[in-house]
Length: 487
Ligand code: HEM
Image 1 (cartoon, rainbow, N blue to C red):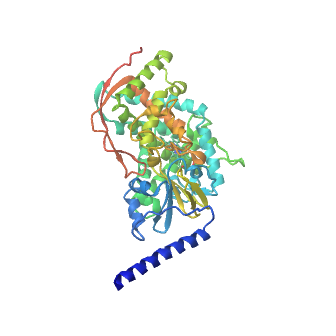
Image 2 (image 1 turned 120 degrees about the vertical axis):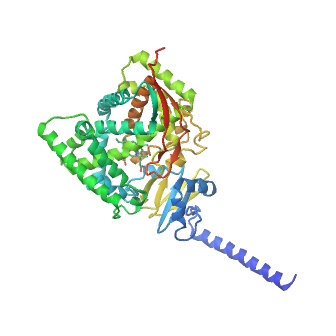
Image 3 (image 1 turned 180 degrees about the vertical axis):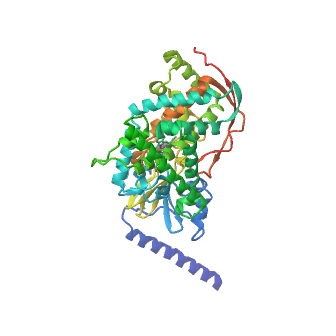
């Protein structure tokens, strides 16, 4: 052996020895259970994490999950985001109290849109009370009234279609859902008299929520200025409506009325500004999410004839049983349609990333038995878009298969709670889920019963760039009016 080889060998032995000693020291310092920090996504220093995230969080998850597993951390400039992917590791995310995992900091960017004094602008005790107002406004007795309005809106809207033609289904459903939401949530005054003004103002609010707004919600850019003006005008419009409702003493069946009549625990009634803010929050939570889901449902059903036939058969059976009547209880019997919507929403949850800010250390255990300690101060994230397609939870996960939710399979439950997270779950699970299903069912039961549709554009792609992730481009369908004949 020459001198160089010897030197090399000695260096090698030294490195190995150092590594062994370092490992031993860390084993002594670390707790006995061998807990450790989650693995970290390898990126370029400083801005590397941001660049990976900007390329698209789902792209990043697809690349890192197979390498790092269900728990890992991404360094995002001065923040650390820890991802918890899959039901085995996400219980804490959904169940933790606000003192441990909070929404307020991570969803702050909504404040200029929703306005002061509501939701993420108030502390948790007030927010909880405001969410109670939502719960009360969405109780079954209220939903029954909303359904009648949903059905009327759908009948009116589609009565304007001809006997046959071609339409952009995405545009049509977006439009119908704004009308229905206006009627059920914002109230008769807006729907009947102020619809154009109010929807233009909502449009400005919508366009004022850009990806950059998440980091700099008050950046002085034209879109934010228009957003702020629109919000002010909406507040004026609703203040007038609320005053005239109070003066006339007339009560309506809509969310506006519920919010006007809501009272905090100490007996204080809601202010006009709070009512406006809560209505805006409701519209932001429910409008795009529902219209996107309606479009995906239609696209999938019309590309999978077996499921379309099953949905049609169900409509025929219900017509035989109940005649042409469609109300809350009839919609609740539409199980095939329910599963068809649920499956479209599994494949395409519009809210692709849910976030929390952690205020205390916690540990998670992966399904492989690895334990990780996640220090306080991290942002904690989970992803419905990624977790809803995990192959160990959903069989053949990229396939549209509504039967996976049917009795006997119930893939959304088999792997445990928080397997299907399109509506979130646990402490902050969606309060509008029943409303959303009823609205989408009301639309599709009407379309199935009255029209034969055919998708004429290619199957839609996902618009990953939108804040609420939806359908890219137009979704052209050819329609022909028909009367569904009862068996
Ligand atoms: C297909 C339609 C919808 C989808 C996919 C959806 C999805 C979600 C998700 C994922 C969350 C949880 C957010 C988180 O954990 O950070 C949530 C919360 C919420 N949603 Fe929905 N939503 C829909 C429709 C609606 C509608 C129609 C309303 C009201 C009319 C609504 C009101 C709410 C509210 C108030 C919360 C907050 C609950 C809380 O934090 O306690 N949503 N929604």
